Image 1 (cartoon, rainbow, N blue to C red):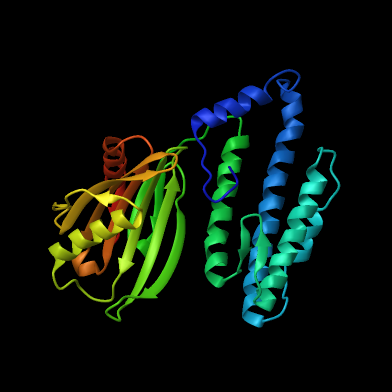
Image 2: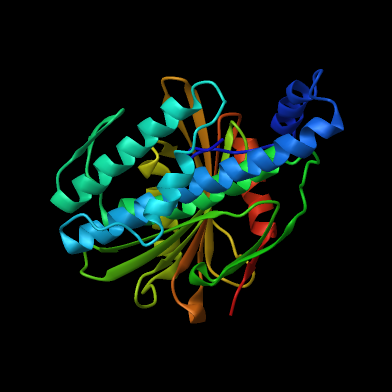
Length: 303
């Protein structure tokens, strides 16, 4: 729930509250006291992690340990004693790991994580900050006794789209140089819908128009599918809202089963750049196509 690939559904919310509402916690007076504790935990734990990652960013730039203005206060809040079993030990471990990462950022040395050595980089910090915000939003929906699933419009001007969704997408940015020397700027919006389904919208600014839009759209679909380890099916040209577009799919065979992928690439023409709609699911190619089509229908282009 709190990790970068977390998600929340109505089924998870129902399961959580079915456990929480067992006696004696079904007494409303109990929840008048407990719910503020939940909210404080979310604000303080995510708040501390945000300050820690901001401190890593500052330390990277300075080449020495630099703490954000709010770091010490956030650290003090999460270290307050609590009666929750094991909570204090877990918080102390989180704080120690954060300070080790800050030191590693300052030194330019790898940090030993549970997954092995890793470098703290500007790109990693820029990925983690929006993911922490998304984790906080998921947790707040979880601890609200009433399931909140209101679809609303989210604006992402950097990706040139607005999306109708019941939750915010995670936004990540990258820039790199293509083989032809062009500078490419990428904005990735991603949302994990549940245990099996992920959808993304990618805006790519390739610093100029495609010389051959149809061929480039087809090639981009094929590269997107194969980059996920799948064999691309035949790609079909398909007009999308008056723009050159191509659609394709594929299946990647992995240790746990099969990943089904569906992709549409759209050249934005006068707006410049391209959009890629991608859906990935463990269930079927048909489901992947339906997820992608639903995502497209929920997306409005911004001028």
